[in-house]
Structure formats: structure tokens, C-alpha cells
Length: 310
Ligand code: BDR
Ligand code: CA
Image (cartoon, rainbow, N blue to C red):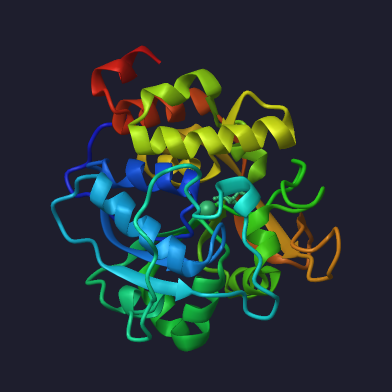
């Protein structure tokens, strides 16, 4: 178990919940090493109205006493048509979990840039969905983003691993490659935690029953999807890794690379690849999944005492 630092790391999370987002958010909210200063909601796995409702439910079900400010990052990609992942995460975004109906999101909801501007000191920004919210924040006030984002950890992309949306591309990169191109060009201190490492982080089908009821209902759908599409008896919980690396940095090994993203339509859309003329980013290429699974089970399981045995 990582030692708990005296002053928790301030974190803002942009997320499109999403079943693995739900696990990642729960892990973040239940980790004393992190001070979750706000959550910005994006379209991605589902439409933004569902994603907002899901985020509210996740925060409520995490049993957090403090009020977590919510913002709306992006409602659709910068240029391309909106496409969501109902086959992967279900029409609601949270599989078979029972949820209240989604409402309308009013225009006065704070955008990500205002959430960042309100931070008294620089934060770690974790993006768990398409990076449209961050691209919009950069367009709106790049100086605020640079002043307030000390580190950007993104679950996005793939270098050597097979894609999960096309053969070549990862979902978050595929959703809005134009946004990713703008974010990479900004050369924030970005760390890419993509499919090369997240594919190795699996919750096995037989472990689903150890989570709380609503999370079991969400994960059952995710496992059915992986069984059909990847012939895997379990679920790849990608987004968890982008939070876990904040808690225990030695679970990932990074390579310093220059990257570009493919903007063409078709199979190559959203493909991330090394390019000497590209933008600098640190890219996670190796993972130790067991300590991450332990963190997840220790902190997010229904029965906290059962986690220790994993
Ligand atoms: C990413 O896409 C979504 O399905 C997941 O929530 C994760 O952020 C994995 O490619
Ligand atoms: Ca996600």
C-alpha cells in the first residue's frame, strides 16, 4: 500500500462515465492521497446528459461528505459527428445499473476552464474520455490551463497495442482526433496512459460479485461486451490505471516520445503513433497490473475486508 502523503494531491478529473470511468472515479474519491477538486463531464461513452447523471450518482454512491464541484466539459466532438459507445457501456453508460432519469443540462453550468481557474494552486488533470473538454479549455484560455495544470494524465491512444474501436485506434482518441491534435500540440506535461498498458488491467468475470450491487450490474454488462467482442472472461478497466498511477507511480513505465494522431476518416482515424516531427509526450508502455488490482479491490469493494485476499 502506498504511503499516504501529508498533503493530498489536488486533482481535477474530466470523465465520460462510463463503466471503467465509474471504477476510476470511485477509486479517486476513496483515496486519501487525492483531493478531488472537481469533476468535469464529457460526452463519450454516452451522451453528456447521461454522463452527468452518472457522475452525480457515482459521487453520491461513493458516500463523499464534501460537495464535489461538477462542470460540463464537452457535449460533442470539435468537428466530427457525435458517436457514443452504447454497445460497450449500455444505453445509459452504466450497463445494467438502475439509475434515475437523466435531466437537461442548463447552459450556465461551469465549463472545465472555469473549474481550473477556480483552483488556488496547480492541479493534476486526469482525462478519462475524449480530450475535447481540454481542447475547448485551451481554446478559451490557454494561459489559465498552463497556469493551473501542473500535470496531465490521459487515458488515451495506443502505440503497439491493437485498437479497440478500429483495428488501429483507441476509443477516446477516435472520438475526437482533432481535439487530441490540439492537446498534443499544446505540449502540456502530458502522460498518455493508453491501451498498451490498460489492456493488461482486467477485472475477471468471477470477481464482479465482490463489488456493490449497482457496480455489479454495470460490470456484468461490461463483461458481456468483452466476452462477445474480445473473447475475454472479464473486463478491461482502462480508466482505473490513470488514477492508480497517481497513487502508486511505479506501476507504470514511461517512454519519452514524439507523437502524432491521424486525422483521416476511416480505419486510421485517431491512431496515435510516434513521429519525430510530432509533439512531446510521456507514454506508458509497461504496467504492473497486480498492485493496481489490489488498490482497486482494497478501496472500491463492497466488503472492504475481502479486498486484502486479492
Ligand atoms: C476508453 O474508452 C472508453 O470506452 C473507456 O471509458 C475508456 O476511457 C478505452 O478505450
Ligand atoms: Ca472513459
